[in-house]
Image 1 (tube, rainbow, N blue to C red):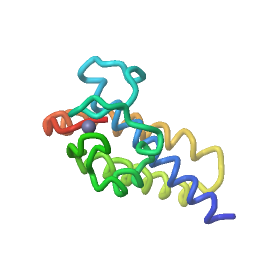
Image 2: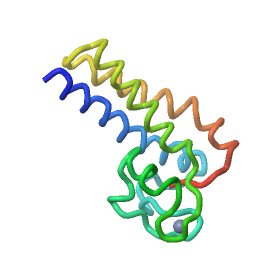
Image 3: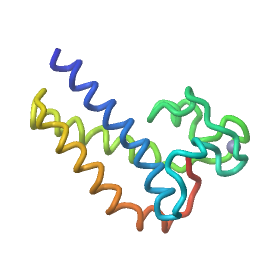
Image 4: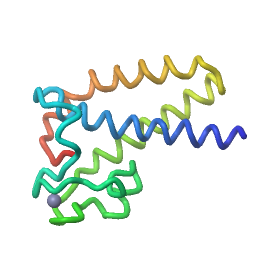
Amino acid sequence: MQSFLAFYAFALGAVVGSFLNVVIHRYPREESIVFPSSHCPHCNAPIRWYDNVPLLSWLVLRGRCRACRGPIAVRYPLVELANGLFYLALYFHTGPTVGFLPLAASWACSIRASCWPILLSTRSSAP
Ligand SMILES: [Zn+2]
């Protein structure tokens, strides 16, 4: 049961990390974080749900858009991985308690605020 919950903490962190990638890219540009849905910045093809699975899709597609084969920056899976690992560490620190949730939420807010100037400076492909 412990490892099952730990996996879910990691998966939740990776999903939140995926959303953080969208926020980090779009919010400073004053773009909606909801619409349009994730799309390729090279060919504007919508990213299908099975190509939008944190970490796995980037690996399966080898960092390229399925439609046009344009590059997808490695920073996207790295943010997902880092957030997943941090959520996993939070889970091991708090255990399966309600205390996990506010810590995870405050981390997500702080990483968004602190990372966008750095990530903006790279100006690479985005979801
Ligand atoms: Zn494309």
